[in-house]
Image 1 (cartoon, rainbow, N blue to C red):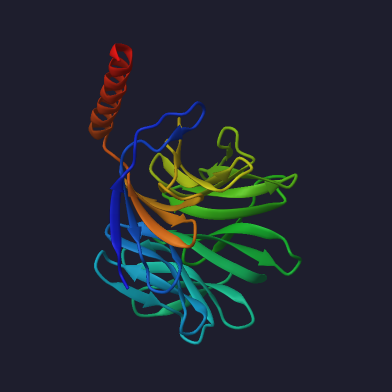
Image 2 (cartoon, rainbow, N blue to C red; image 1 turned 90 degrees about the vertical axis):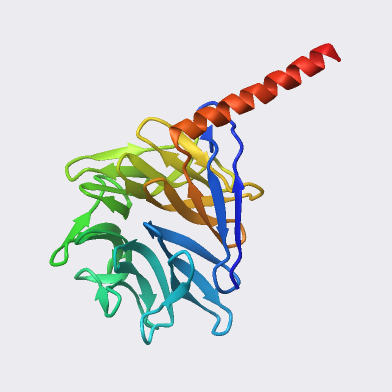
Length: 294
């Protein structure tokens, strides 16, 4: 049921967008035949898996040792997408509608802005929850819920706005304009567009401090990314065609990859990067000298 595989990524640098530099990928074999990791807080990871016995999705909480199912009672399916402390958020289907939820370890509370016909709850930070909803007219916008009030979030002029991650005053997500998806960072006052260089669509999913993670496409398969405010670095699980980064906490990133797999990626410390880079340069120099003397 549970398989854990770790491997070290190689050092590669590309023009425009950097490839993942060092760090360790851990593949999580969640219960069921497929799944994905969507949120992380400390040692705890939340996500979803497909339960083959019932043919539907279930959320999970993984504490580094044990997987615990997260499922709203009576729902046809559930997905866990964000976690902080004992609180988990996600969405569920009651058979006729998609609704958000907050689970405090004991009680499931439904989240749904007034007038919503379809609701997602994506991430949580303190008392604040971000998500998105579709109203009865078919318009999709984001929301910020502080435990009392739902505040709509909409990028000016956008066709749709989808709020994803939150950390303090900063909210990330993506919006559609002229049928193109762009990322955004909202600081409570200003929306700043985020576009991976060369991408035709950018989807930020979470933020922690100065770091933002998400996915993008340049016309091919999805690639994960890490953006530190200056540089976009591609995240791609080795040996796979597609990777999406959904959650970040400190140096830890979680997401999913081709064929419905889940992963944990640990960002290397700067000193580790220096050592890896020096080693890669040394190997290249050694190979060059051998070719020259051959």
